[in-house]
Length: 437
Image (cartoon, rainbow, N blue to C red; front, side):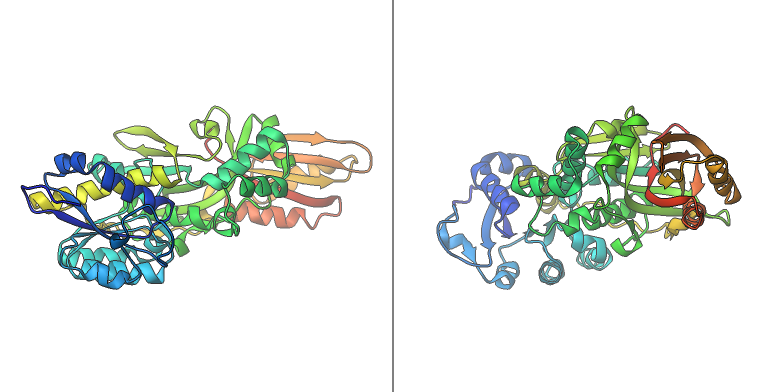
């Protein structure tokens, strides 16, 4: 690739040539002239690190290397784009790049959720950029609005659907009535679920993204270990049918918000779990593999960001946005936003978090059961909003929806219900989010 005249070229190394890396490389090669015009200097691809060089990878062979360390260390590389995934290998490569004065663009949410502090400090020490828009919600711009557009506002809550696999599964279960196992298998056949879907369906992926969002929104370092997490593997078709009867659907939500602790101090909550969402809430209509994030700020009010949350091309779009910003900073001497951790707020334990609940139980069909169940809720200071009974004969299904209560109070209530002789089983306990209450 020839380098046009003018300002000194910005050299780029790409680590990884999978779905995202291939798209990044394609855009760099096919839109070189447009990128030069936007950046103010040529943006030149110096090399691509891959695990193996075999067959036709769709790029000139001289650009490929299996020696990522040497590629990162090259003097003509100014920006390193990391899209290989994993933690230890990219962590070492990114730190090497930052410590040698190169800016970094990464889509690695798992790495960032655990090591943002270490990486941010390395970037600060060398006064270079660390960009990661693509780490959360694919093509949807969320990180930049939080760090720049809302930098002068006070963000109170960030909540959304940030995992396409689980949203596809729950949407399909809701639409077809199929059970979880069959829908997961179909998601795998269609390419929406990995061979090992644990990171998605058990909420690890969403928890990593929640940690990143909470860190930025609340100016506090939050790691994946700080995020309370539940997955969707226990959701049944019966739960979704019950949700419909309550004019709700079920979504895996990532929720980050400011709350007041029991001692009156401000804390933050970061949590991931499946929850009932009222059909009139904007997140209820986000279906398939799409993502959406709702931000609530003091002055701006409610903002919603919606779009494709995964895939090679959408994620590459976010990577390229970061790459252009980093390249412009190289040309014009600017820098992107640094890590902001001045607030250093404490993480509230899940037991202190108040929300509403849906409790589904099987009970004996006899007189006095409903009043006894209601008394058990009242004993633990959990107020009941609605009750619905289904079935007659040897047993009945009882669905209770509560008013707002703390997680600890609800857990104590459920434990006590399980000990009652006329309660056969507590089959489901889900939270209800997004209601007007």
